[in-house]
Length: 118
Length: 251
Ligand code: SF4
Ligand code: FES
Image (tube, rainbow over all chains, first blue to last red):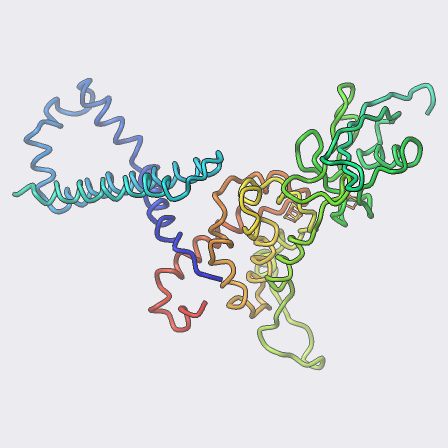
């Protein structure tokens, strides 16, 4: 039988899921609650200057890209199989929309990050 | 029995190909006692009310795997399910979902059996041994690797539970994939390569979307969802490393 190419999507899905589980809630807490409400962090933690400095370093770029891209691939796969389970069988259209969206998001994020010069 | 007797309504999905265009429900009033299974209720119907009702059964003790049916919409063994759980509202029994009905509660097992045969559900010895060399030894730890998966009785409840099998009957399905894992995980077996080609296909492990209902309905505590998930991991590792591991690419 023909080998499936699903491992590519499944690995990205798995990596995204792992990353989301590990740091997703913490990120929501820090960026969405703690910093805006002035808890634990200095009020200017997420100022433009700080965020720019963060994404000027290679480690920062990789981190931002991993969070954006892997979360997107995770969501794309989840939505794809969910629609399938619910009986939406426009297979190609669903695949193109889900994975195409994640791919576009990855490329845009990577390009934008690369354009940020030190 | 007479004065403590309760009556329960059992609706049975009938399909007699020579007279019914499509399956129809037929209702029977069955006297029962608390120790009676749904299968016994059906046997009462056949013996005293309507001898034309057809269903499969053999062991009456959840080991032969032949009495599976949908009971109030859930896949169950009728010999392991009691009528008292459905009293007083009554119950509906139908042929297992996702499989073609042959007659009444009897479905065709052909697809399942073909798939089962395709994974070589027997030990293919790693090394040939003569009688004098004695048995193949195995440690308790090695046995634990596959034991739960060896409890499968081929009842097909997990197939009736699996939405992926319902959507695409080409999917190998939970029970057979769990058995594939059962043999591949056996330290005495050397047939992994022969079975994994099938497992690594879209119709194999990758046809599963991790719904998990198969493991919930299994009457023998087999966890097909777990077997499939473990193998997705192996399959993904093999996918990416096949060109750097000796012999990896021909799997
Ligand atoms: S895995 Fe469980 S539910 Fe599926 S065929 Fe085997 S015994 Fe039946
Ligand atoms: S009659 Fe054998 S499993 Fe139910």
